[in-house]
Length: 147
Image 1 (tube, rainbow, N blue to C red):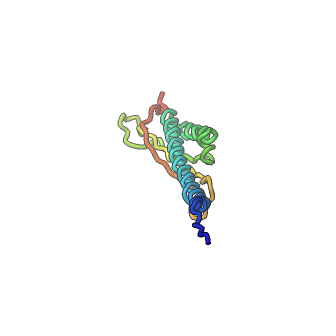
Image 2 (cartoon, rainbow, N blue to C red):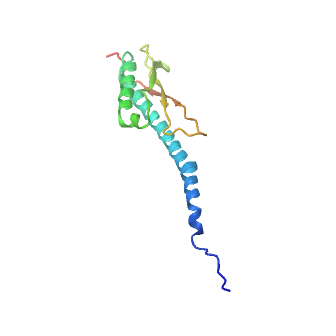
Image 3 (tube, rainbow, N blue to C red):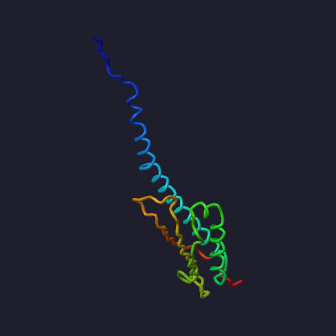
């Protein structure tokens, strides 16, 4: 009688299908979603930065309109569209801080921006509801509307 040995070649390729499934579904797709949320956080900070810069350069009477215009431009740009974000909401306060120069107007401008971001994928164990980020920054007023 002739004895046959077991064929040992190809046993690793049988395990490749389940391994690829686990890597794609369990590791890769959630990590892409978390990277997108991190990028959305950074893009929201940039929207707050733009709004604050515009509000501090405009006078106190035009600061809210300038900040809203900056965030509308951000929402229609590539960054706002990439993170699936509607227009952010700004709250502008231009009478912040001490009146150091004695003109009756605060010397700082404060902008609070709220950005709501929709995650890229709807995953079963990860929150798929919109995520709200809130940013607040203060900057010295460059124009006080006194000129």
